[in-house]
Amino acid sequence: EGKLYDACYYLGDLYDQGQGGPEDKQKAIELYQKACEQGNLSSCTSLGSIYKDAGKKDQARKYFQKACEESQDVKVKTEACKLLHESQ
Image 1 (spheres, rainbow, N blue to C red):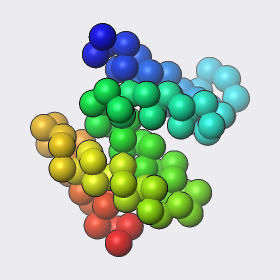
Image 2 (image 1 turned 180 degrees about the vertical axis):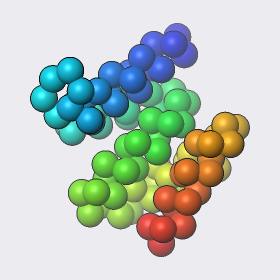
Image 3 (image 1 turned 120 degrees about the horizontal axis):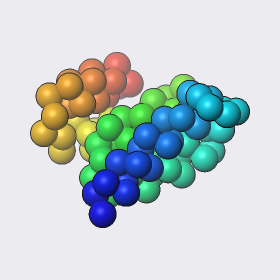
């Protein structure tokens, strides 16, 4: 089951970046949300970045904080904590 949510993260990334097709932020948000809810914390960071870029700071901080507090991956944790700090 965890692999399914990893796939949602990677597919969300494709929509987010417009790779292999048109950019679709709404579809990226849906996919990142599914993955984030199931513990893919890279998705939480990516979701926060979309909200940050859209000027939705409260939503961005929510997802950055989740990844910052819960990630066991040093790279993900470092990036999320940095983005959380910058969004204060």
